[in-house]
Image 1 (cartoon, rainbow, N blue to C red):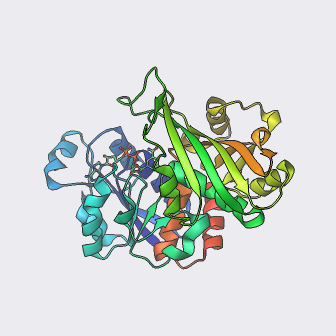
Image 2 (image 1 turned 180 degrees about the vertical axis):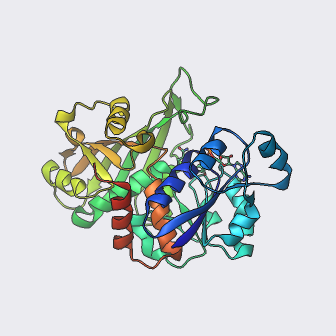
Image 3 (image 1 turned 60 degrees about the vertical axis):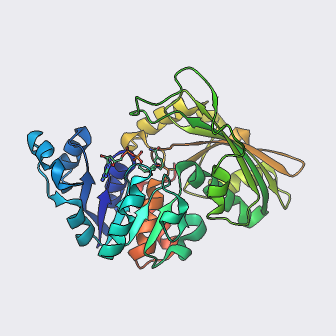
Length: 337
Ligand code: NAD
């Protein structure tokens, strides 16, 4: 069994913890938090040993009646691998601690690429991450782009990608974020950082991205145009995308016209927290004009990186190859809608 510690038990950390618990070859040995809020209580209810970020927080947890198992340093020492899911920028502050303890670490996409030895998406570069001391699971948007491009590249060849990312303003619980009633070019300087982030995994890819932020919390939506090097019909592309368990083709007859119905669908399907771990690609949107493929996909920002974190754990400290790990993760979580 791989002993996994999770530093940061928020949007991503709590999902990764449950996903680890679902796997046959790994277990959660503890999760760490700074504040004794409802998520801390939920961690205790799920029987995850709860560690605190520093000694001076002990009183606050005691006052809230939340039992704790120790300080995060102890969790780092006793884990075979740490998944850092602290807020953007905090992971970099812990990087030295992980290194000193000799505990391999997985960071998230909010950190700069140089926080880890390698940026990671399982379908693209699992082998590069094997046995490394650290890896960074790229952001939700980057993960969604890399998965799609990789699935198309082998049979058809991807020459050039242009993507417009319509991004949610914040997660449902991020009450302080916006816009509330606006449409923001974001970042306003073009192109956006997402293309270079994809290139941390696919360095030779010709990709340019632009982004906007809208008053939504449910998902991101990407509008893509992709130059293919060989001819492909929309039907061939649909079949190819349908073959991956991490891509979900939304068929015309489902009547799913946007992110709202996708989330409703996920809840009806019994998905924990209404999560959609797969890229959701509208089959009807797939069109080819003069060798250029067009499509829309929706990305559930809170959960598409979760299976990637599980594969990153196996890449760093496990003993299975890329294909086996992805198959194990998919089966344990129930990917492939
Ligand atoms: P979050 O704010 O929801 O959760 C962060 C957790 O870390 C909280 O439980 C908080 O108590 C804890 N924490 C804060 N400071 C800490 C410290 N010093 N030590 C230990 N724990 C601490 O954040 P999130 O949305 O889960 O984001 C985590 C990372 O994942 C970021 O790098 C983010 O960019 C990335 N990410 C987020 C999303 C998303 O949509 N939320 C998607 C993909 C990647």
